[in-house]
Length: 114
Length: 109
Image (cartoon, each protein chain N blue to C red):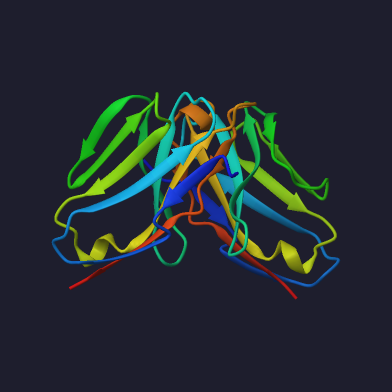
């Protein structure tokens, strides 16, 4: 069974631009969670989607948004990029909700904002 | 006080040593996750447990719900165990994961 895939793996953008990251979960998994990892803040929860509905949201500004499609693939979008958005963005999929189910992580997208 | 506290922050061990990493949390939980992150960023879920003990190869995870404490043990450590080990618990509101700061483990040969 194929693992979680994320595209692109690396991305360089400039301040003010927007970016869209993609995550394809393991086949059959309905939950996709997104996380941001920075050296200063560590891993932080962004949001979780389950069956195309946002189930949980972390403490991030409205510039961070996401969606999930009927095939469970998910995208996250960051608008008006700031230098502080430079981070590793990870998605993880699980059969049920991410908090109480084993999560399978993708390799991450490393975003650099210049 | 952070919801999830890990100790130690850094750990250096000699190959073959028994290693223990600790995780304490402040809220009631339904499950606790142990994750491993290698240099380069990839994260692997090692364990999810809600009570007692789980074992996988040389790795053992235990949890004491009453004391709000979990430990990850590595027996006969090996340089390939060098990684960051992270514990995480679901937030009391909504099941989103809250992470510890991680323990950086280096095993020397």
